[in-house]
Length: 107
Ligand code: FES
Image: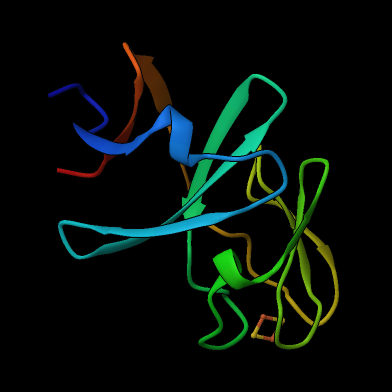
């Protein structure tokens, strides 16, 4: 546990492929995991515009494109990058622990 939340095991590093968002559910949170080179990121998996899963979208560099209406977010900051999305997406801290990726979620 940290000031920010609780660390959870999220995925084996081997399951996270470059350019392929990975959707998981942990403790009721829908999370999308991303690998960009040797860096890993986690965001909410639910688009802030409607109910689409970002893990079904296209990842280009550090930008995820929603599969439903093509809104784009920066997975590093959660910032919206294009319409129709207007609300930033939640991001979560991640860390590598051995051969696993962990994500810190609100307590
Ligand atoms: S549901 Fe994601 S852009 Fe509309």
